[in-house]
Length: 286
Image (cartoon, rainbow, N blue to C red; front, side, top):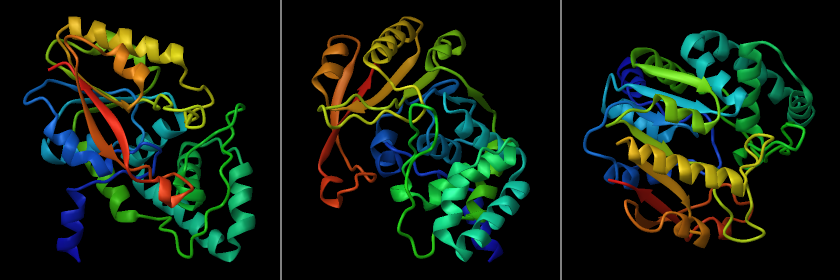
């Protein structure tokens, strides 16, 4: 068991399931990484699949990660700094959930805890037990996803929490809650910036941008395009994931951008038949 624990300790995985998560695309992203770079920046952190891949592969890699979702950022810092307290809180959630899953789930969903550990464990608990593991909030910033249909959800993934904590503490990782544009002041020549924003809709019914209570708008997409151009002029290496939409393709047409299409699944779609066969864009300047 100790040997198994040691192996898991060196391979942290995303501790939340996030819309647009990149675990399934890690091999493709790995092929598209720059050969060398300085600090790694990821301003739309989400589940952090690429971050954990890099930290597993390159021990001591300098990273600056951020997201506008304050509860998500709080969860990363709680796991890094207080994994034992978080695990203990999740075990209480697990015990109460198994007594009466429906009433307990909705009571937690309605709650507004104030402490760091309580906020982080609430997010992880809801993420593990809600429908499809979908993180979504309404216009008032309230989590509004219904209860999922699980017989025995993995609410307390203790080994992975300790693995993530160990990895974040043993590397040079800065964690911030901020708008993506703030990366411009920090990134220097030779640094690598990976953008994985809420995707631009490919149709009127495909719009899913409510990770926070502020939708990622067309204006935000335009800001992102201008930011990518400024980072390119500073000598930064830029990689961007987005939907295979005409608007995104046109915004990144011409030098220095190289665009490729890759196959991806949509694990959060409520219709299993619509989860496969999607195309995404990978856009880079190197």
